[in-house]
Image (tube, rainbow, N blue to C red; front, side, top):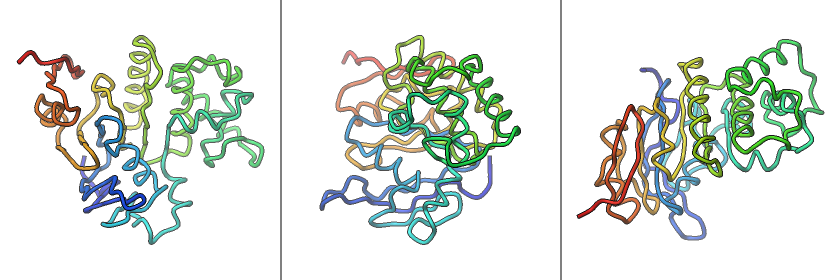
Length: 264
């Protein structure tokens, strides 16, 4: 799709205690684009995610998110327009909350529902999103009783409550077994199909987690871009082998990817 960029990084660098964890990152995410950011642990994926989530601003370079330049806007207000799903959110949510309450908290980005009043329309939207996520029957269950995969579905429904333009997913399949991962990706596809103008940025270190709807990829190594562009051009043997310091062969079947050791 075309339109003003939802994310625009120009030579973005991030420095922690004199160490550059992101180095001159430049890319754009447009409405309806689905991006995956791949790299080994320590590649800079989480740092890039934090900038895209308006939680950190660049040390050098310029970053725009939803048309706002980081460092020249109220980042607290900007974060309300971004849907975020991460393991940190899962850990911070009160375990005794009902699933429907967890989803409702997404409207204001809170971790508990006590400080706001929710309308019947809000509650209907929460149930609709749970239905799309395939977990509507869990709405009256305590969040603590859910499996890891079910929690991920609920937290994504929560992230979509404010009808954001941008959805950020931080290692969403971490801790899931193969069956739970596949169910998660199927439901994610359903949710994205219902929100076609929504832009997605997902970070992972497993190529098998790349959703079929993915349009673009960015591969990082030690904070530096190895490759970026259309997913089919980026997720290739050479780029992944460089990024993961191991000779890999990338295979693609029905818009899903996997990587195996290359026999040289």
